[in-house]
Length: 136
Image 1: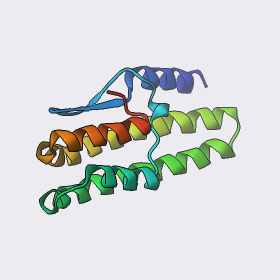
Image 2 (image 1 turned 180 degrees about the vertical axis):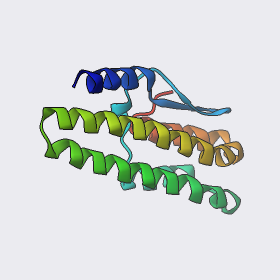
Image 3 (image 1 turned 120 degrees about the horizontal axis):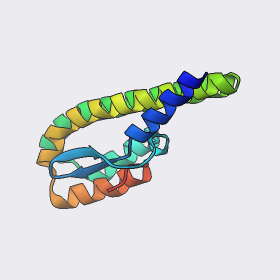
């Protein structure tokens, strides 16, 4: 039990929300549980970016990784609700860890798209990402 609590504390301390800059998505100091990704937010991000046809090609990889993250988060929310206190804590810690790993995959997939975005598109994307728990 103490190992799970300690692992959770380490994960939460080590993880953070993310920021987008010219160099890509980065970790900031905030709790991983603040990051929430839903299908609606993914659609909102896509709409806000107003992608050109040449940028659209790069969006598909980002969208796939974001949908995978949203699906994983939903699974861990359900698992967290089903068990006792220890089971819920362990499920939350596992969910935070998976969020961090998934965000690294999103980061890798997003790099080519971010490089092609205009400053206006980046600013529009930042606004939507901030609503998902990612700070700048």
